[in-house]
Length: 244
Image (cartoon, rainbow, N blue to C red; front, side):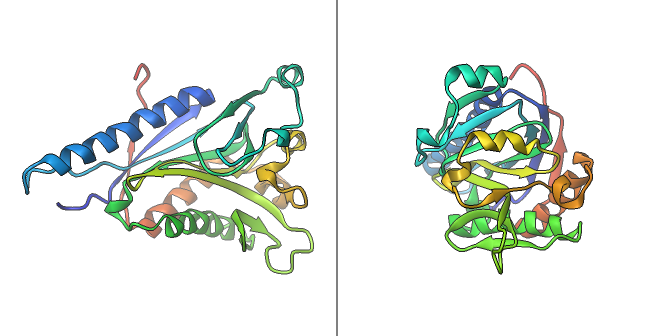
């Protein structure tokens, strides 16, 4: 069957976390269902699987991955409500993180069999797209061994700080969940958690590093370019329709 490397891009804007999660899951499940159908189809009658990339922002929310620890959320329910934040246990890898306005949250829902069947390579590609985007702003970023995500001061580690967190789910080589890239993020919200379960490293944002806010649309455009290049994909913009 011919591989489909095109990626359909949708910008969901500011959207409730649960609403975006449900939308992701609907797409994810539809791709898995199509793969099952293709296994039963006659040779030559298979339907190429689609790939999607969703960008959005969320109202203040904390999410805890499968391997996370609830004690890394330092707020009780009353304090959460006072901060106007919500909390979800979800089915991605990783520990706890924060999503909020001023952050680019990316959800690639890809059939990796269209590209390569290597989840570690997939994560490195996501990291590399962020690293290249930061380089466009003159910021050197990279990886720290043993920690997923993108970091500043990753070499000497005098003051290592995370600028992008990642956590994904992959089933039958189809991905969901993704990354949270701090642009104009209110970093105070990270004080209410042990981010990603890491207590001895800081969190930062592009605005904090540059000393001024940056238009999200500008960063998103650069990030899309790098993601398309790394995956060898044409990224096709589609309008998000309400009422799915």
